[in-house]
Image (cartoon, rainbow, N blue to C red; front, side, top):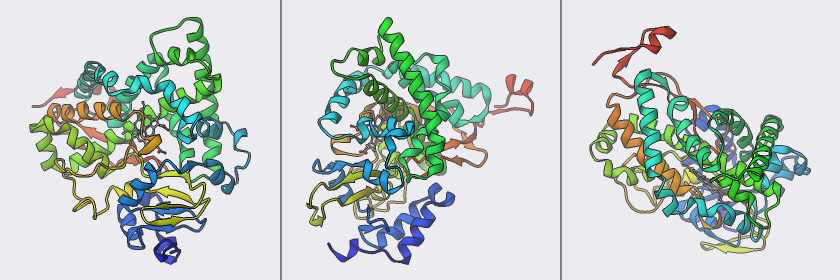
Length: 423
Ligand code: HEM
């Protein structure tokens, strides 16, 4: 091993402590810079390799020789009996944390719904939902952007695909936030909060599965029910993962992306004037403030050489994709938002066997939403402090007060329902 991956000095401890603080999670980028100064990859006190270098991170996550071995980190965090904890069982048995051949079978069961062709066909539906949400936002004048747009857009899309009836969807906002806490560095408190949420999610999908078996509909839940060789537990864990991944991360992209655009009025103006920039803009927003900041659980099953480095058998790797996306060796002026940036793709959707199944869908939603919002509300502005999600692995906002700028409401419910319009 080279010296740069053996560093565990006080600098590293200071950076890791700050990364676990509220301020550190909200803006981890200065901390990533300090981490990168210690080397492209460093060993943390548990012996896990933390990778912040883009090229090494990209090579690692695309390398099929690495296996997902979540049980090692779970045991190290005190959860040897993780199958007895509902939240851990539901997450860590899903395709996200499995290896071939189980991973291949689970992924194949849902992949057909998310091909580029199937997702392109959803464009009119997504445009309609965006238009409706914009009309409601216009009528409200000011709102919490998460409640009014960044949550309802992706949950409506994935809810329709899975076949979750509309009135049932809102409950999942909090349940999924609590359940997906287990993707972060684990503490007993996180798992205690995630367990009851996972029990509810599990029970919901078990019931939905029974209903679709009795009366199949034209949705993914009915399709999963008919896949040969899928056990009920596998259907439940797949549906729960698709629901969670389908909105939590996309909510993050819409919120983080809007904040970035509003902080860069020149770039926002460019996208407003040239909606054809939407695809490139979405990639840059994904790079600039990725809704997924780190990927864990990859382990070298034997001694492996990757990008000129020898990693010992059993080496655990955490890829800091949020840091890799700001690597100055790959993205010149990495802290600058530049919507027409070209070059390497950000690592925000991962890579290799586990490359995000929903990437075409997330891109479609963002590519429609951002130009539409900017065109509808040229004076859109943030009006108060944003509230960040706990943890670092999933990086997004849970509150973002905004005003559309064109409507002023008086205090009080009646005024809010019948706002004065000032143009
Ligand atoms: C901006 C939005 C999104 C981001 C940033 C994102 C990010 C990611 C990343 C980084 C991974 C790889 C994890 C790993 O390698 O360990 C992943 C996997 C996955 N994503 Fe997404 N995702 C997004 C939206 C979606 C959507 C809309 C869906 C669902 C429809 C989805 C479904 C999945 C699934 C099922 C996996 C597991 C794939 C596998 O293990 O083979 N994601 N996502």
